[in-house]
Length: 168
Image 1 (cartoon, rainbow, N blue to C red):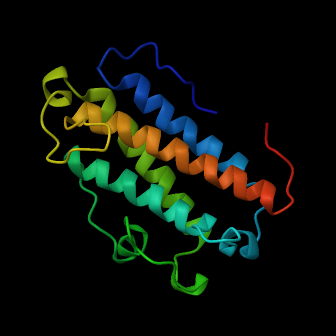
Image 2: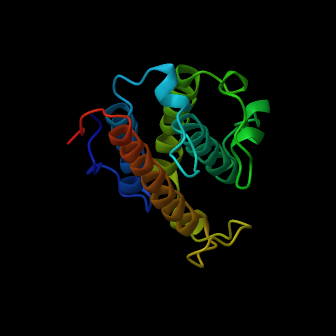
Image 3: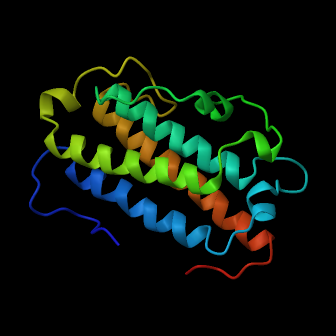
């Protein structure tokens, strides 16, 4: 498990970079022993299934990479996971293992880039204003971290709804 705080880094988003990396362990915990039917199961009454949530947070990480000027060309599957997108048949999504790989690859790239980010870069406008009012690179990164943890928590709840044991 990556450390929560990278003590040898002094850049403005170094601690946040370590927290993004921790979420890779969190993903593994909340999705432990998921089978295909678990990934595809939406909650009764509506809502997103775990495969959509994983694709959504993976797409969000890739969006942040692009905002940090890291080469991360948009993949054709990212359109399936944007805000307002509709659930599609499970076979139309990339596999959970593929999305997990993209999620972790994006985490490694985020960690590397955030560790080198200057205060001037962190304070630069992101070109997007998030629901919390943040609009800088640093503020946007913090919002997207919160967004990711929120959605991973949803997967944890869906896990319990599928009759699987808690992870903590």
